Image (cartoon, rainbow, N blue to C red; front, side):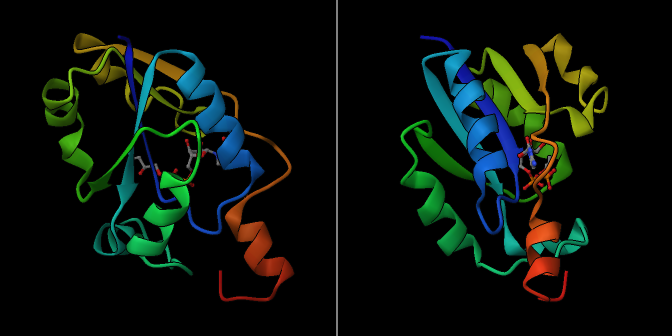
Amino acid sequence: MKRVITYGTYDLLHYGHINLLQRARALGDYLIVALSTDEFNLLKNKNCYFSFEKRAKLLEAIRYVDLVIPESAWEQKVEDINLYKIDIFVIGDDWKGKFDYLKKYCEVVYLERTPEISTTQIKEALSIKA
Ligand code: C2G
């Protein structure tokens, strides 16, 4: 059983997120999403429209997602990889190179972002404070 993990805020869920999750899941047999908590998003300077609970509910409804856990700190990845026996860490290539230090613990895969969509764009289009 190949276990995959990815991290993110996943606010205003859109097809770019789904593209990422679908490809991440296809790399293994089980996909965990470490979802940024509301508090952690403040550290990431992200102003979320939906609460952690609502963002988690949306992700848990996606067929590619097997488990949602909280992401509350930048430093938790190594512990998560060990705790959940992760084989592959996956994230969008906007983070390319940033998580290469995890190569000591598991495979690291950067997947191409879906270019023409982002939560910020959606907010701007709906004139919600980005
Ligand atoms: N993504 C994508 N295409 C888009 C938008 C996002 O492939 N058009 C991917 C991102 O690369 C990321 C995931 O979808 O892998 C979630 O995106 P965000 O919610 O923006 O995640 P981010 O804030 O980058 O959080 O510790 C890592 C951070 O928590 C990553």
